[in-house]
Length: 254
Ligand SMILES: C[S@@+](CC[C@H](N)C(=O)[O-])C[C@H]1O[C@@H](n2cnc3c(N)ncnc32)[C@H](O)[C@@H]1O
Image: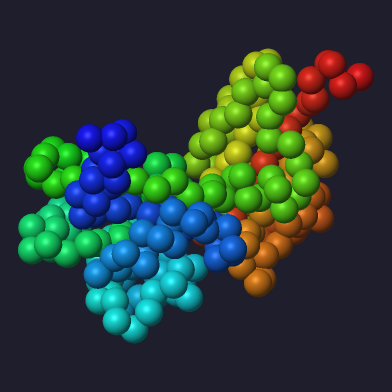
């Protein structure tokens, strides 16, 4: 069998595809993502409450035609671990059951499928409990990459490091992250900003970093906001917001 045939038959045997749909703008979906949705008989996607909207399904909506079965799966966003684990298990069991019945499933995931992604819980649970279930992953454009592009802001250059991390809970933690980043020449992407911006703003201000920080909200959506953090008042921001912080530039530029 030629390698291309082998690749094709391997691809055809995949019954569950975890699909990164990018951060918001449907034109940032990859061709592979669109193809996986078109080939699917069932399009599954996470919702945080019963009957709730799915950001991933909204992004991909123009590709989900009426003939496809839609399968919202509950992934609650709550701090308690037990109900979250039960929900991942339930969703994964449903997906594995459908694969067994011969359905072709595309499970949609906002942004990339491997970066702080709901799809990762499904992947790990299925690998452990349904090793026979064949799974294909399609990477997506990350919110961090899309925010940097929208701000025309280089993420990292030369020997610089990039740390993508959820925004910390305390100013001590943030101080430490910022100090270590300054020493290491590390650019920071702080996700899950939300209401933490209320206190993070004053930490950045004290350190003279507001001018060196980009704020990005709902990147890729029609109401996208990208701005220097110094123009942003200390009020709560939506869940879909992040900061990019660069404390210096590589010496080679000067
Ligand atoms: C659970 S993570 C998902 C990351 C996603 N899988 C990715 O690859 O970008 C959610 C966090 O990513 C960031 N995020 C995701 N999409 C975003 C968007 N369109 N605009 C701004 N931030 C976004 C926010 O910080 C949000 O709290």
